[in-house]
Image (cartoon, rainbow, N blue to C red):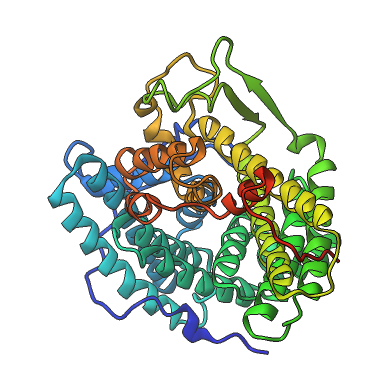
Length: 481
């Protein structure tokens, strides 16, 4: 079925395209992921000291390396641009500048930068919609980069509960463009890395909306595997997406009423959880990580509010930012899967469906609760690495935020899940709230500040199992399939 291009429409507002002069600069970001390249490309500049747009562009390309925008920018300018290509290039650069300006405006509490960010965003909307109307540009790397940046702007500049929903809506547009781009995107190095990174964001959006991940995004890498150049890309991310896609399908079936039988839902969710467990225990050598302990330290939240170098004395060291992101996607997904299992087990128990031994039901719920809390703890232990302070002795977190600001976006959903698992007043919840403050105030990502308000008093959903374990409540009828 032909994708609906209307899903890609990003707005109807107007603006003027900036005139672009050029200068070459290097990337100084310490963040690494497979496929990242040293940055050498022309950028818009009038005066470095005075041109905030240039500074914002530099900031973005230093901080947001996770979807390889720097390579797209480099390639775009290196190959030159005709009139049509120039439109896509301008849309991309305006959208990049809007995100960088929005970040800097939040970090510096600057109303003038905030106005500049909104102006660039308006310009980017107009240019991107024009590019989407051009059949030669609708699938271009520059256009896709612009769409992604416009969705990031929603996350960064907005301080409303709806900002995360807006990003999810944009992710559906990204999915449509990835479909339209087809297999050829995987044969270009820049397109290959963008596909891998953006597909992960799309599947997270599907999990949030409980919609299916388009099958073409699951199957496309396998269809062209024989033709792909030997990019140094570990297979773990692709393996995980396939499992996550199965769960998006299960979520959609439940939401749409296709699946109503709780016992059948539990059976299918358990099968997916088994696959996730196999994924975690069979990681490739390039994908493993180390669990380190901070000597002489057992807590981080209760006694040292300024410390982000470890979580309760423990932190992770990953081989790349990319692998850290994939591991957190795994944890986030597996928590969702087990939450579904608990929901439907509890429903079966309360309805008196085929009674089974209460002790088995209780033990199974406790095992699931412990797994969910361990997964949430692992999310917390990944934060020091993502903040760039893992293993340091009380390093000031704000020293590293410039080059790690882009990582804040990829932490929003995992940290929200950790807060939900822990519940208010728990160490995990307190840690997540502190991290959101850093991401919101120090990295300039507005949605993080909103999540502090939304999740600030969240009680958590596992306390009924704690009560059952302690004997304070008894569920007299329970089943397991």
